[in-house]
Image (cartoon, rainbow, N blue to C red):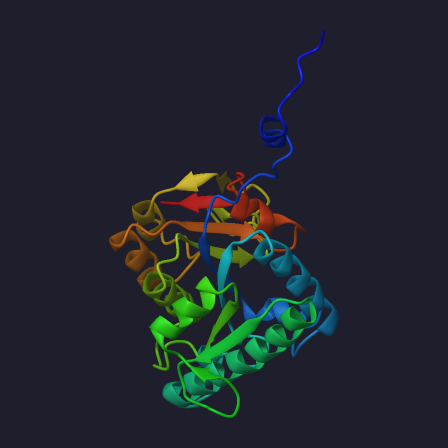
Length: 252
């Protein structure tokens, strides 16, 4: 006679895989919001991105987001055009707020409660960034989008992402890019570029690989916060990263 499998034991075979990370900080460039264009916001691209993030949020992963503003304004480029660097950086911070609001709208249309918190206070638009409140939002299952950088000029959104990740006790900084990970040289210029499946913080800094600002990498190194660099243009990579599957490059 065949053994009858108890219901709890049988359920073990039906359980879906559990995410590796409980809380992540996802860093997106502003350019990704523009889709195939070079400027502004592509609604279709933002909707597709929101659907992918929503799938991960529904697994129970707590997600913090930092979005750049390069699709509207780049402070460094403005400085090169004889604009004051501080003014340019502040304009770039405001551009990140525009992107954050667009992404919030798309996520909430997917049924995911989302909060935008800004380092520059603008009460009619978004919540001011308060660390404990941000953590509480995450614990309640809300996606939190951190906008306006650190509110300080001369700091990139990479540094802002690292700072927020440390403040909310994220387990990993996930940087979404246009390439598959960290290479020994720019793969968009050199077809023979070699991809690193994993690499140390020190090697990234010593070889000036430029995957993130040196200050952001050094901050992660000093606090033992791993970074995963992966290709956002491959659908499902955010989920694969959250599940702990080998995707992109692990910097640790």
